[in-house]
Image 1 (cartoon, rainbow, N blue to C red):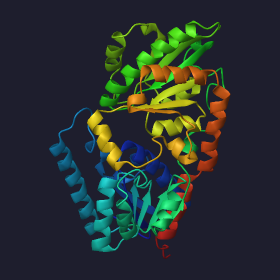
Image 2 (spheres, helix red, strand yellow; image 1 turned 45 degrees about the horizontal axis):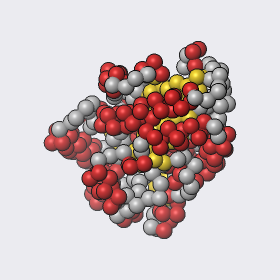
Image 3 (tube, rainbow, N blue to C red; image 1 turned 135 degrees about the vertical axis):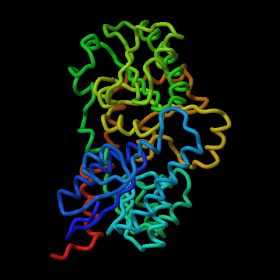
Length: 394
């Protein structure tokens, strides 16, 4: 597509669905401040919806199930070659990188070395967890970093990188106090109105489902049996979150191996709806735990991998907590049961304790939202982008 006259060109690069989602909001905000900007890039449905001229679709970068490594590398190379060609044919005024550091840092280096282009990085690499060496690359090739976690400010400032904490985009997605303890009437189905509900979030990858769900189901059975010994009018039931890339039959196959199948309901809609209904959730470590914190839903964070993988991870990942909510607060507001501690017995014991102390854990999670700040991460990032491109000469 030819560049429209008297307009500026922003090239935006994403590589995963979450990055595409946040990039779509960013493009929308930039357009609201100046509609005379042409966008091109690599993305998915959210950037398409914003009429970005995509020269490569991220659907080709990640496939369902097991993807051959060589095939994946060929797709990445194809995307990178197209990126280089686009720079040669239609040099942009600004490049915006969104997450996806393996690809995007290489793109930043090429753009700087060959064209000296302005580069903004939104949702930066998790250098606080691993690959701290990436800070040197960011300093060398990125003009400004838009940070989404408050504790990143100190790290980037110490490294001498021009950066701004813009807030976290998830704050915009989750209004305050949208959880069952605040809105009892919001339930997935009428049968849950007088029930205690525990959401089970085993993850979005097949390997995670295989490892995490089995542990969660065993914990759920213990919770149910122990809860029945108490004198209470409320029943207890469990909602299993079915991620978009997971087949329901895979979850049902795991459920069939255990008794009390009637306790479980499988839900394949937005995870936000599970937060709306649940008293507590048991979740595999990931961004979803921060979403739960923003909904003030007490959460037990669990994760378990092979012994070899865990030992390797311990060598490279140097952080105090696994959960983002805990890292933000610098305290365990969300109990973590990892590796050998991620047992059905320990999970059920913690869950029963939390059900008896809901208000305490809800209050603890309020600190997460306060530290993340106000809404408007996309808008603030858009403001930075607009300051980085030259003004249009009338």
